[in-house]
Image (cartoon, rainbow over all chains, first blue to last red; front, side):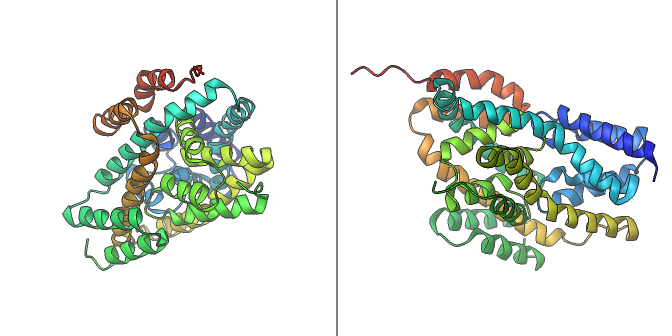
Length: 175
Length: 181
């Protein structure tokens, strides 16, 4: 096991963790620069493929770092990269949520909760928009989205069944 | 909210959220499970937590798991929630990475993914309807909602730029005022 590589993995991903304000995707360019350009852990093409795989897999898309760590230093590298990417940001969230619990009845917390609600709903709509653009949807996919939205909004059917059915429709090549 | 969730419950719940989100829509799945199914949080508390977790550095969904875990069970709760959220996905990703670097092929899931992504967008949209119905009452919240959608979704301004403009307005609007009695 190459200790130097492990140290590089740990330092790179823990610093990216702190820099990733606004979500993991904001540090992708820097991650690419270091992992491909400086350390040569993987090629350009591999980085792009690994990114696509991480988007496809369930769970947080930040697990791209698991695959980069794996390529650089096997299973140990994969685990180390994943942990390094989560710990520094996690500590910060821990501190903020503690402060937040203490402020339970303060006017500031009430104002943030009430005021952020419409902003969050707008941001969620923005992410639906961006997701649909990124997936390069055509009219059939939009139609499927429309039908599923109607089902989700008006019925109590388990959403998992609908996602599975939509996956099947995609697998059959209908969208 | 009835009782505080136990550590295994936190881990299993976040595992469920992670696996359900195949094709995307983690935020919508989190709400579906945490607010609707488990009733651990109210919509308002959940939505503000989502935005705080976006502002803070780190992967948004990992942050949300930490936030919810800490709220109920402190540090062990955060660890349980993050463990639940990431363990199975990490194993899946590792299997895919092994497959990819061994055989130099991206696993053939593109078709399934396209369909599932269309449904994930739909689930996210239905979250907009369901939560919007409650909080988009009145002119100012609707304007805030539209403004941030245009800035972040259409014009693709960075999150921090949008929020540094709109968050002060939103908080000023929402600040509790003395009730005249």
